[in-house]
Length: 295
Image (cartoon, rainbow, N blue to C red; front, side, top):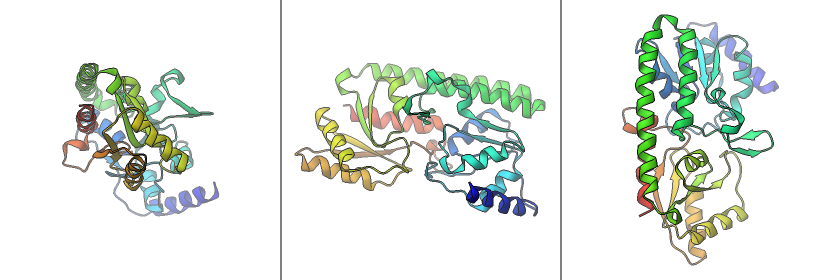
């Protein structure tokens, strides 16, 4: 707590100096993508964490907190996705509007992974994210009432895109036999995706990449691959690939063989200027890779 407060005090000192302001500052690229879809272009939206940044282990520096202090409003995922920023976000929430995307959901919507701990990776269940976007739209209208009509129109357009992508994945997944619908990833970021689209998902690490995995995790994951006759396992763009490479070797030691597929987008989107820089672009990239692995 003391360290977090020192960072805040240092940042507040920096914020007294002239700095470029931003209307909406988002913690992750995923949250920023939602805000950009809803808001008109004249409202400046930025992401604190850029592509391929792991929010679980992200440590804000003084300049980051200065940006947060200078932002008009702050958007974040919540559910402790931004694990090392929780105290800072709570502090700033007493000073300015701060909105968590996950606040739109109820406890029965969430996947519990431990005592008082829910999985924060809500965005790849597009129906859940649709509801989060709806709550975000109401929050943004409160903050920018002069842009109500544009936000409402943009929200309806985005709803249509989310519904279309969700329905297409449901149809594609239903064409795959139940016995083939299983996947292994670097960390447990796809449980909501698996629940929504009927896929059994196993992560080598837990919901946070900050957690260590042990010999038992490696052995269990390797056995899962063999039991489900998987031919492909997935690294993630925001996670060090060494863990998946080690898992590939563990499978080989058990007499099996598995390839490492195209890295999936999990906790961060792709670089600006690429299709994967949007949630729906990353979703399409992931579903193409996952469905191909079922063949």
